[in-house]
Image (cartoon, rainbow, N blue to C red; front, side, top):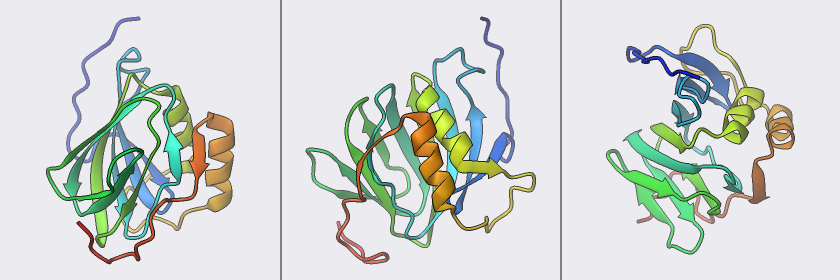
Length: 168
């Protein structure tokens, strides 16, 4: 399969309302011949992922706006701010929580993860008008996405701190 160039403006891409936030696919696995999955995601304060593993891809994110508390198995939890890069190797348990009013991340999955892409597509819903605020998250849809995608959820978010409390 041949790959064609992708040229997108700042607000271009496929938009999904996802778990109380807005996700924009910038490059999908199909578009990159499986090399990578690239998306931008805006999330509100308090959004926390469960402790989970991507068994088929590494995850890298670059923080564009806001602050996020990151937990990576075997390391100390850290708060990251704009300009920070977090690289999570394939198969490594991790979680994060938005501690600022909102955050915006650029996420890269390598190689393109069909598990992750399926998860986001099932958990999200098309956003024909990608304006904020998005509708609230849907726990049933989120649960169905976990079941259908094969994402490995290991447990609840591992954060004891209160939303908005700053720790470094």
